[in-house]
Image (cartoon, rainbow, N blue to C red; front, side, top):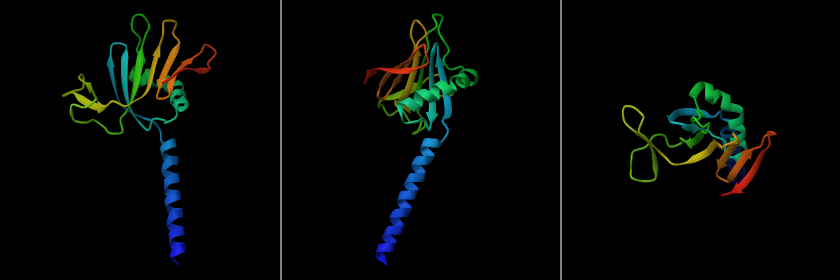
Length: 152
């Protein structure tokens, strides 16, 4: 009888964990807030993909929406831009003197987040997109293929 209870509990835990992982992987990315300073954009997100290729794919599929809805990837006069996506899992936090990022343009008071960049997208002089993620640096070639150019 005890064996059946332990087996049933184990199956329940395994199914619960599987469902939680499945939900996390399929939950839509939420843009919580966007801050701009010149040609730099900081985008606070929830449910961002974990895998590097999934992050880049998400950007490629959603860059038009980000440009239209949030003015993200606003280029300088020379045509350069940088967009950094920050994990917002911990929400806004208090300034505790640790390694945090402050958004001074937030009103009515500055807001702080933990520095946990999940993706940075920028472009170079010829307009090539550059992606910096946890595992390295990638570029989007003219033929549409994403190629890894550097390991971190």
